[in-house]
Length: 461
Image (tube, rainbow, N blue to C red):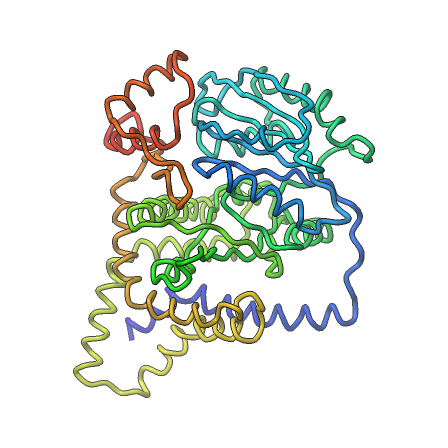
């Protein structure tokens, strides 16, 4: 009885999500039948592409995939934020209107330099902002919102002056001939992603129709690279997760606010190419998921259902070791004799989410239906190795509590290689912090920070 109650609690969020999802789809179909969607007025979209270790080819590919995304009637201006490694995006511009350097203060209160280039890639208005020293993706996101969205009240003078300059001298030229006043929304994607046609417009339309929606996301799939379509490794990676902190920051403004899921907005991203890179990425994502669920559970302006769901998630992650032991004992019990009737309730609770997912794959979601055979193989692989992977990832999360390290660079096949000499890396980092060196690659900085995991100055609250 205790085992059933425990599994019921652990699976309660998934079980209830299935019921809510099914009822929600049915209600939406009926509602849209009697009240069709109204047309949406033109929206101005700031498209942010933060680049850490992605290649120049990946960045350009993302820009053109967004250009050809059928965003009409909406308009977009693209901002590429290069975080510490030079990429010659300017060489792909057909017209450059401004090029200049400005100082800025990072989130860690360190003075840095921004190299800014604005122009057009064919008919695409693009602003490239390059941070000479790597400051992290969080710093890039905050910088983008400071410059183009709503600035913080404690904005540094450097950033405030740069914001005024961009809005006065750059944006009017990039949007010339259009009725541009301000950006209505920010679209953020990774530089190694490919956005399917209509995805941006679908997200923008969903936000524009719902005045209380603060953010929207779509369906993210793994891009299977040529020659690796049937790689077990790539298939396994189609079942992994995402970031939560920025969402919490927006939701915590009011209990009326909520997020939207738009399944017709589809994108593909490149998967890690080795076990080492995979575990580094999952450690970062696992840490993000674990600790940000505490914010959802205990933070401000969270509705009750969100707090309950977050508490279940925290407890579920905390009981990884017990859940694996419990599974072993359960399998042992099955080998020693069991009553099928007694485990029927257990099977219903534990397997209903899987059955609903299979129904969505084969009957509801066209993009998933195209990959149904690969998802089926991936599901089997996932069941075989997920206990070991979960145990390994959570152990890495627990061992690195308080670490600010973002993770390893060179995650994808076309990413930059890591630096070679540890002594040279340390010397370059020291020189860069004193302003005596040029660009420090993300690979070099990440490797140095990995070597300093146990240093007390890495601890954060």
